[in-house]
Every structure is written in C-alpha cells, then in structure tokens.
Amino acid sequence: MSGTVQSGSGQGSSGQLDFDASDKPHAYDAVRQREYFEGVVGRRIIAFAIDIAIILALTIAVYLLLLVAGIFTLGLTWLLFGVAFPAVALTYNAYTLSRPQSATIGMRSTDLQMRTWYGAPMYALLAAFHALLYYFSVTIFTPFILLIAPFNSRKRCLHDFLAGTVVINTDARAKSYKHT
Image (cartoon, rainbow, N blue to C red):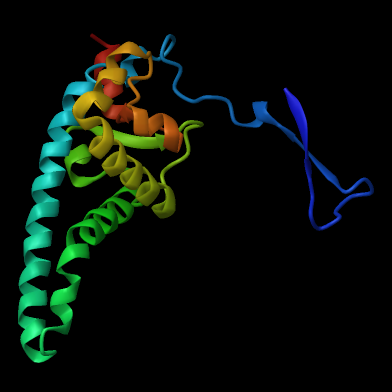
C-alpha cells in the first residue's frame, strides 16, 4: 500500500516523498513462526517480577543516597524522593532494553526479548516510552492489560500495541520449541 507524505523541506520536484508500508512488514508471523510466541505470557510475568525486584532495590539505593545528600544540602535533595522510583524505572527499562540483547535482566533470565513490530532491536527512547505506557495503563486498567495477551496471536499486551513492540522468545528458545 503506497502513500505520500508532505516534505517540509521541498525535496524533489513535487515536494512530496513516497513511502511504501510494505518496506517494513510485520516480523515474526505468529502462524508460521509459532515457536517465537510459545510460553511468552507466563515467562513475561516471571520476568516482570524479577525486574520489579531489581528496580525496587535500585530505588532503595537511590533513596539512601538522597537521604545522605539531603543532610549536606539542607534537605534540598529530599525533594527528589517523589520522582526517584519513576526515574529509576524508566532509566532501568531504557538502558536494559536498548542493549544488544533487547531485553531487561528479567527478560534475559527467562529467554525473552523485545523487538519493534517490524523486528528491529529496541532503542532507548522507545523502551522508555514503552515503560511509560505500561505504568500509565496498569494504573488505569490494573492487571487487566494482561487479559489482551492470550487472545491475540502475537501475545501482545495493551502497551505493546500502543508502543509498536512485540515480546518474543530468543532464537535459542525458539529453536528448542521448533525441534520438539
């Protein structure tokens, strides 16, 4: 399916750029490549539990640093207590998901990785955006965001749809499912 986009820079003779949506087809077809989605939902919950434990431990360390720094700054750094958890969580997700494995520590321990809908590795800005969407959606919809995953072939949650991401098995895990 083709379309055109206005180019604000006046490139080309007509001032328009052509794009073709078929340039980036959906990666990891859930029908032909089922091995990439086997057991993802259950292991994703385990990965989340591991990641939240790490984030909480890091947040406690930041709280202790802020507490000590507050003594020397006459309490000014204590104003940062409210933003410590969100800052740690977003930084953790952005950093770990933008690594070459495209996975948080919890995801790596359960053989999962996150990709864009067209199969590219994650990058820091998209990882932080995905985390923001998760925290906002879980605040509004509580754990009901997980109810979407079992009913779609790519096992995507609400925030995955909104961010344009997909969580899959690593290649090694997928190969083990393919041979069984």
